[in-house]
Image (cartoon, rainbow, N blue to C red; front, side):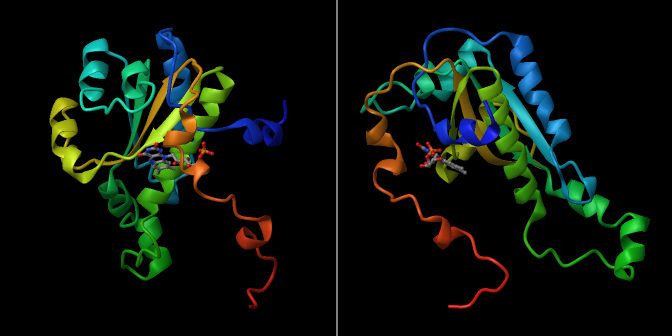
Length: 199
Ligand SMILES: Cc1cc2nc3c(=O)[nH]c(=O)nc-3n(C[C@H](O)[C@H](O)[C@H](O)COP(=O)(O)O)c2cc1C
């Protein structure tokens, strides 16, 4: 199936069967991070793959029970993190400084977030390739201290987003959870402009 056809089918799945994901599948999926683009090849992206049952249970601890279990059924999580310092280190290397007159660039946007998004997308695409379903989530600010402690995340890493993985199970209550149910898909003309942005 072509990528375009696959993308039409892609959606967040928030309920999984109890089938485990073999370690080698998770390894293949995680290895995509090495192929992710990154500004100046800074490679600030980091993945934390979580497949230990006790940790998975802990992450599901506060799940509300208003629909099928989401975290409670996930066979694994991939947390996408970024190390901003990798970008400052890279952009103060001689070849970069030569190009910018000796100063670290003024960052047009935080490229460490951009690159994390690119790595996240590769995880989602690899999940499709492996016949898995995936669901993206953000870790709320209030929850961050517990997550960071539980997963022993070093201070120089920022959690950008997480992805739950598993074999898709029926999720008839999908529409309760997805913003797709409340938000209209924007038209191509709203999203894509050609050549000049005139009103
Ligand atoms: C950065 C990011 C954070 C997200 N956080 C959540 C979340 O916390 N909970 C959730 O149910 N979905 C979350 N989503 C999923 C989006 O709601 C979903 O991608 C969007 O509604 C479009 O649906 P689709 O991906 O199924 O096409 C997140 C997606 C992204 C990219």
